[in-house]
Image (cartoon, rainbow, N blue to C red; front, side):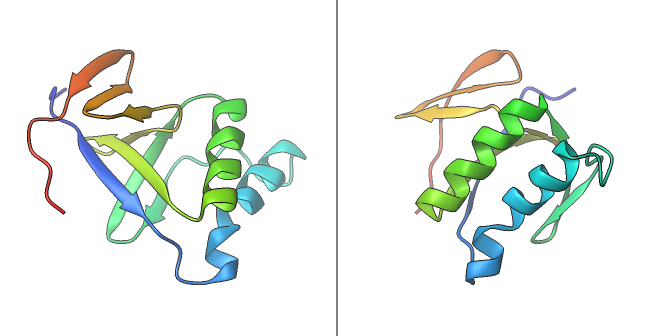
Length: 102
């Protein structure tokens, strides 16, 4: 697997989009749906990597802040990833951002 990662910024365009991850986490937790194997986020089809509690934390941050950073590698998305300045912790490793476009 490639060591390159992508950092995607997700900003929901509506109130329902802001709480979409919470709805997925809730249905997963009560057993209404199985663990999500693939999620379509914009043009990206990603496989979430991480625990149910990490997904809940991500969903809560997304709902409260209205913006999220997704760290992906290939078709995988680390739901427990964190971004601190130019350092990204994801997939059990630390990465340094070498190029940021705003």
